[in-house]
Image (cartoon, rainbow, N blue to C red; front, side, top):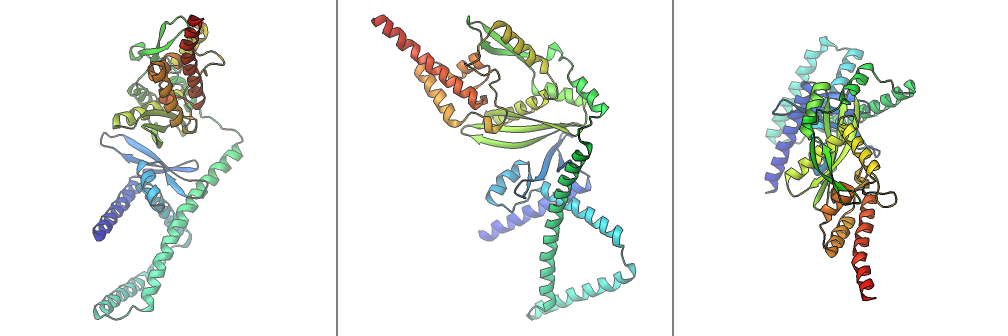
Length: 389
C-alpha cells in the first residue's frame, strides 16, 4: 500500500517536471516586476496566469490552488509553476555560464568517455555485490550539491527580480505611465452600451420605495477587455473558505498594471465559487474604469434621495475590500439569529438597507446591520409597553 502511494507520488512529480519544462519551452514564464508570471494554456485557447514570488519569510510561493492545498500538508511541495520558474532560471544561468567561461570542446570526448566507463564500472560492481566505491559517494554528494545549487539559483532569481523592481522604482522616483496605457484606460472608461446593463432590486428609501440597482455580467466585462486590451490577463490570488462561504481574491493585469478585487459566494458547489471569482474580477475591472459610471450613478441617487444608509447608521460602502475586512462567521451567525427572532429574512433585510448580501459585508457594515436588527426587535416591545400603559 505504502509502495503504491510512493509510486503514485513519484509519477505525479515526474508529470509536474514535464509540464514545467514544457511551459519553459513555450516561453510562458516571464518576469513581472518583483514576481514571475507563469501562463498555462487552456482548452479554449485562453491562458490562465499564475504568479510566483517570495514571501517575507523567504519562502517561494505560487498563487495556484494546487500549491495552496498541497503546501499546507507538505511545506516542501513545489507545483509545476514554481518548477517552471526554476527551470527558466537554470536555463538563464547556463547561458550566462557558457557566455562567460566558454566550453573546452577538445576535452569533451575524453570527459564523456571517462564518465561512461565509470557508470559501466558501477553497474558491474552492483551485479557482483561489491560495495560502492568512494566515487559513487562523491556522485551522491554532487547530486545533493546540484539540488542545493538549483534552489539557490531559484531564490537568487527571485531576489534579483525584487531588487531590480525596487531599484527601478528608486531611479524613476515616480511612475511614468506610457501613453498607450493612458489611451487604454480612456477606452475602458467609456459608457457601457445600455443593452448590456442588467437590473436587480437594490435598496429601499425611508418611504419604503424599492430602488433598482444596475450592473453588468462578467462575460460583458471580459468582452470589453478582449476588445480594448487584448493582452490582458487575470489570476486568482487566493481562495479562502469561511464557514459555508468562500472568499476569492482575483487580479487583472493590463500592460503590467495589476488591480485586485474580492468576491464571495457559497462553498457548497462549484457555481458559488465561480460566482465569487467573477465578482472579484468585476471589482478588479471597476478599478480600471469599466462600468464605474453605474456605481457613481447609484451613489448620486442615494445622496439625492437620502436613501437607506445615513451617516452614523450604515457605512456608505458596505462591501469588504479585503479578506481581513470580510464579515466574520460569528457576525453572520448573530445576524441570522437576530433576523429569525425578528421574524424577517436576513438576506432580504441586508439587501434592502445596504444593497448587498450578508456574506459580502465588511466587519463595520456587519456591526451596523446587527445594531439595526436589535433596534427592530426593540420596536415591538416598546409598542406593547405603550399599549399596556
